[in-house]
Length: 298
Image (cartoon, rainbow, N blue to C red):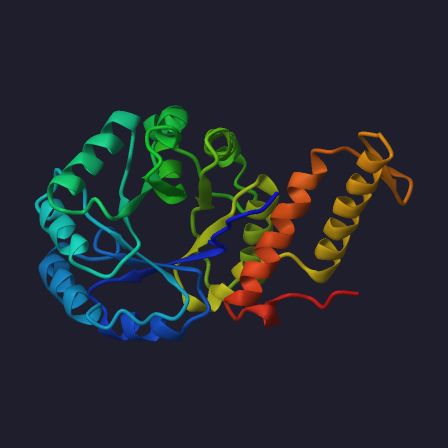
């Protein structure tokens, strides 16, 4: 059983109208860069930001980072021009904002294809109650969908809740979207943490996202990358345990058994899936030159 796994531990939003930020992102240890034409770009800079992005991405060297462009809504004054620009760029995917149904996502993809963007995959922001409630149909709408990216601030505002550190008011919505993503084998990314100076809160937020089941977390400032990458990177002890599970299950099968025992703990065959995913992610991180973020195997 093999795995094709594209790490998206960290997904950094880079404002398209800020040339210094674009250039800095070329050498950052980030799995995915989202060049943002939407939320982080003021209206008066929409066109200049788009033109700057067209110029900046003539040099498509951003290391190992996946390259994504988030456009403005297609029914806005800028969305269609953003989409026309995106299809001419050396990128991996287009991120559509505020997706609220599978039909909306497929309609956006149809427009993308009509403009000549059939070679691009897509991502979808879910950031509204409607989007959460229809997340299962969004996740299953198309195989072109690389990832779902949560917009937790807009979602919290729509839900009329305060964003506490434990995010208690968001947990139901986050769990629903994770379930939807897993039902259709989609990658899902948590929304960003906005308190840049509170290191402990940032670390907590990253580990909470990991433990909830997210594949990674959106990032709004490079200072957060170390904590985010670390939280979603398997450590040497994880890999050691994963290898023991795979070996134990294989040995059990050879003896005509379906389960194994490791350190007095029963190991069911379903844990082999977890083990292989951990090893695949660990190997991919090494291939991306990120081995320094992983604890040594013991």
